[in-house]
Amino acid sequence: MGAKQLSEADQETLTVINQVFSAFSVCGSAIIITSYVLFPSLRKFSYKLVLFLSLSDLFNQGSSFFGNPTDDKALCTIQALSIQFWSVASFLWTGAIAYVLRSTVIDKRTDIEASYRKMHYIIWSLAGSSAIIPSWKYEPTGAWCWIEGANLEGKIMRFVFYYAPLWFCIGYNCFAYISVIRFLRRVQLLANSISSQEKTQPRYEMKAISRLGWYPSILVFCHTFATINRIQNWVEPHHPSFALFVLHTISQSLTGALNCVAYGLNSAVRSAWFEKFPFLKALGACCGKQSNKFHKFEYEMSTITDPSERDAELVPENGVGDEKPNSL
Image 1 (cartoon, helix red, strand yellow):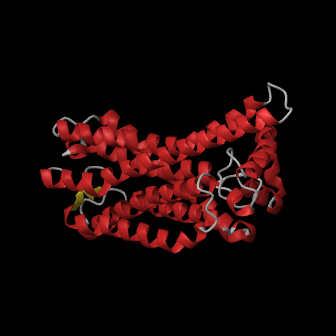
Image 2: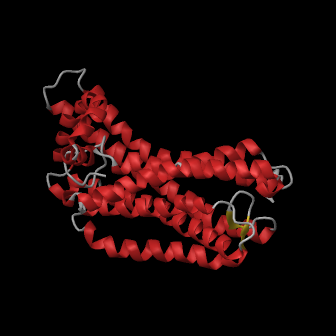
Image 3: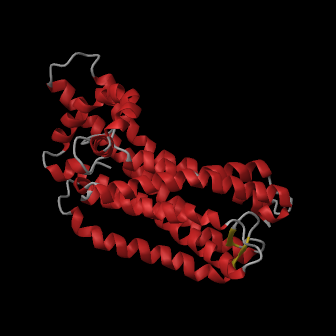
């Protein structure tokens, strides 16, 4: 039952909240896509992954602007199909980025670009299957259209085609980034034991490494409230929590905006925008001083982990290798 048990006013409120916060995600995703189009220097392998993540977020959050089409079966089906397909594609692309990062930093793979087409095949096939198979259950669910969960069949489909792969992907992201963080900490401690740096210097280095933890944290934040809410709907289908639905709606609607900040707006992208539009430098001046603390560390760590440009390119900003144009 879920949101259908809420009052019409509450359902309308959720629809508006979804549209408002989704607008931020659409704008964020559009910035990343525009950056890729405007700046040829960014069209490298790793930023291509970010591009398709942003495209998925753009279409996923853009589906909210269909509103709550309860009286239009065709539009309702299109919205539900779009939400299911693009949301699954979005979290699968985060898994691909985590895979590339771990493979290049820990496994030292230099042939990772050869897997690019395979990534597309796997991600679009899984997203397409997850959207087509449960399509006969697409109906209005209260504030938007998705898989109807009023009966056991609908609940199972939600779990099998969305929440199970979602949390598997979140688990892999956590595993990949924790592995990379531990590896980089070991490398950093080794480098510090060899170098003659002062003892207070590593504090900034550890902080930069720890920031890699933000990537899986975004996934957890964006989907935890939704998962809790669906469990509550399953346990008490006739007593939905409006507060949980609000948290669910806000957190999932911000997925594209948070992915934009984490994966796309690195120093190379900001520098490209500042060079193209100098007036933007004033807006970024407040952040520049703090970010400079990490530049020296990022360059040193990229050299230690892998001297080749390819490996350095594939490490996210605030971790290592951010000096390269296509840092994640």
